[in-house]
Length: 168
Image (cartoon, rainbow, N blue to C red; front, side, top):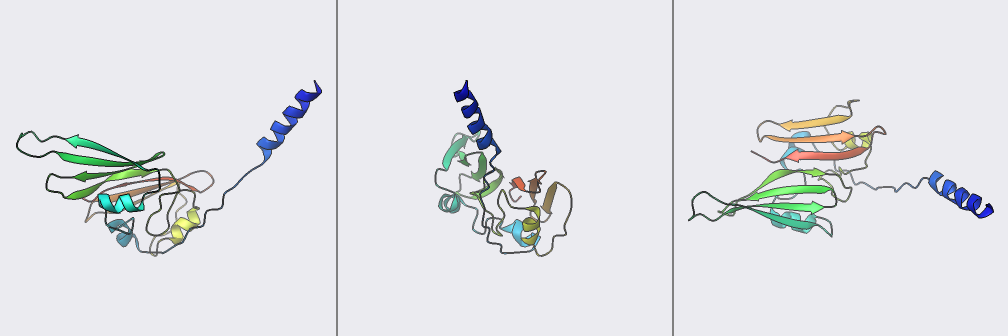
């Protein structure tokens, strides 16, 4: 019986300890329009994402066949890292377009230092022209290029995930 108490006590102590990993974020503030034009800070191509995505990223290729048999198929490249996904569309003429993505991992960072786990205050410091809001989500839109970015914060005002769409 005594051994059960000791085991229970050890489990109790280990469940009470809180381990927090400090995330260092290098902020390069920019205006919202510039951010939405190049959110990753490099060209939005398949080769660009191959270079910058974290080690262990899988690439999934989906073929989109054209109705006419003489045309080559288009391809959708999905970069999968843990719970995150970024998709790029490549046409038969080798044009590449970022379709969008859903990022839930702190290993994937945007151009101005935005990554999962940063505080809401750090998020707003990443922009030069974005006013602070108490809402738990922030939507940035660029109507000229048709890109939208959504950032979702949890109850502790930490960035939980972000989604984005590509250019029209």
